[in-house]
Image (cartoon, rainbow, N blue to C red):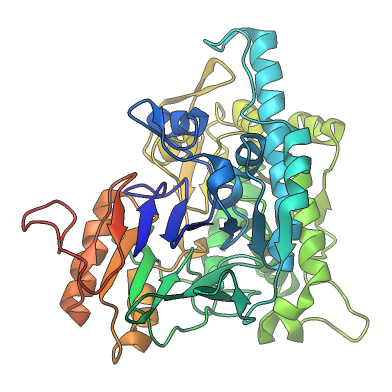
Length: 486
């Protein structure tokens, strides 16, 4: 008997954790942090896995963790998991391993700094404020990582094998294909991870999957279509306005992928003389290190990106207008600078990092612009700004929001519903027995579920947090009318 438990990313976007159990084997797909609303973040502090106050599953019970990619909502719980007793292997691509070594240390550092700052200023309710884990915990977790190649079949037991396919989401991101031998048959389970978009800059498009019995599918943008506009074209008027007003365009951006995509597009606009010369500051040590990682893995570039590399191996991220600010002093010095300028800084949902200091400095000025270029989870500062908040709380103080706040959805690294439906088209002849929707807010999930049902007629199910289902041909459907059944 094979079971699948939804330990995260169930009816919410973050905290990705799925558990396959078969013949005594326990395999976790992803091990991410919950982000956004407080009720979700509090789950990160629970003993794993605690139900009704009782610990029913311990980290040392898990044999493997398989990582779809390195984003913190998919990998960020690993240091705490190891600290709690996990001793198995963490399987991922080589690039994901390298990214995790950057992201997990950065996550731990930011938590330690936030706790230190909270204790110094006294704005935390906890005495003392503590990080979820420390840099030393992150470093300790790296010894359990074991890179494997994409498209290589890996045997986890006599009954279970899997392979990675390209997801096109970020560097190293993968779809997981898993085959499980049962008594009467072999079933195929596919975890989409986060699906990338078609024809976006730098990275290759996602691979198609030709057959599947049970599909765990992301639904982040299940109710939305991304703008068809060229993101560069959308940027041009904002940059011209910034230049004219001698103001600041502040862009909270994820250090992985989004920042590099912005650099790539801004460089192209400047080369074509479509925007005025304006200083662009990349104020994120993590983003700077990730950009170097992009440079060292040019094999993942698509044809267009490779075509821009000349015979001398020139970087696709270099421009005389782009400046990388690594140190704290360089970052602080930006507060004293007047516009026009563009500051790109992490984190992408304004939940931590250097972007908070820039928001404190620039939000009160009506001449400035704040541009959101990625998904903003419910409960984050980024979502509050996007929803029109008049003030936001930063480091214990309420900051007035007078700057203009805008967004460009074309920068999303997640497929929208039309791209998801197109990706599913390859399964038309061998449709899944059941589709489980994850990685989405409930409205997005129901919207996508109806679209899949209408387009393909497949059974779609939206699981609850901590729900366990059986992956069996006789898997019983819940009663009609049960929320989440279509």
